[in-house]
Length: 432
Image (cartoon, rainbow, N blue to C red; front, side, top):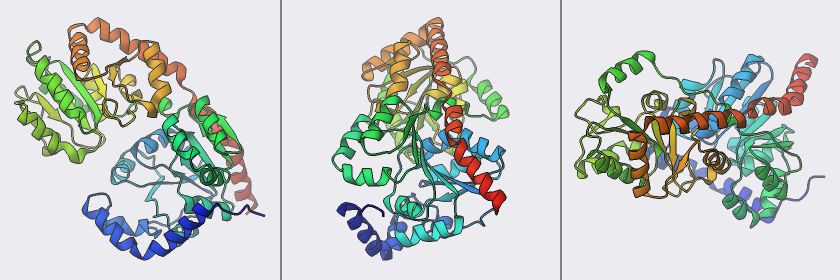
């Protein structure tokens, strides 16, 4: 007999049922703010926009862009084994990225709002044989409904920062009731595994970080060649996945560095492209020449700040810059993934707030494969030092590449842990 749900979860279920009639208004407000896809709103109510493919279907869910990118190599392996794969996420940017990065045959849908009738509609149509939740996007009604339908659920690339762990400890009954319904939790590190186990996950294995095995992002060769010709011999730095507040620091550093490097080009690629114009405004107020990629401008010799406010082009800019500052780390966001930049040969700088990737950055810093800058002044100093010393930044980039190679292997360990579940799906298909 199933254990009685904690009161907080029962209240959540009641509130989500009572609030379901408000879904159209909620979605309409999100649509106005650019957080929903107008033509795909029915998916948020669990109404499918595509037919279910025949055969066993594996469902992979990740909250947004980072989770989806981490799962792409795994999805490719599942498709290569002829499994139908449904991928869900909750953001417009992740949906756009799905069109570019998912392998042929993988289906993308928006995750339904976490109300019982929307979830039931979603599960009734797709009928997954296995559900893989990337990292820690755990919706109560979704998990409880999967458990009721006896759908095996596994956390993959599980991560719990010390900060998140502290928050969940205050509601251990709630998180324990949810994690207790998972068959398996595969985590990024041993520390993550300990935290999942402490919160009530019954089976936990540390398999490593899938993001370390993600191949470098691609770039259109013709566009890359043309952009290189436009930039010529100018020194280039990239500030990747920046958050509010960091753009000002990068623009200030650029302004100071121009005294010594007058042809310097600084590319700012915001985490959320909709901020492009506001970044351009900051640059103009600072007296810098600026252009927006979303307006089809090019980084011509007269442009100092180039705002890459488009999706899916970091692969292009990482190939153009020997130095990359990873955003979300001076701002208190928790840092962004440095692996793609490292795989494409960049020397990486980062701020102190990197708890989302704590183990990766700690190992990189220890091996001198990245460098911590604590503030705007340190960022300016380090950028200037590396711009002046190609050999120094090359040494850092090579150390980073070695470290990433040593830390890899999470994909194969994850596939090995999933193999019994994949075998069960094949057996069920043969029996049917």
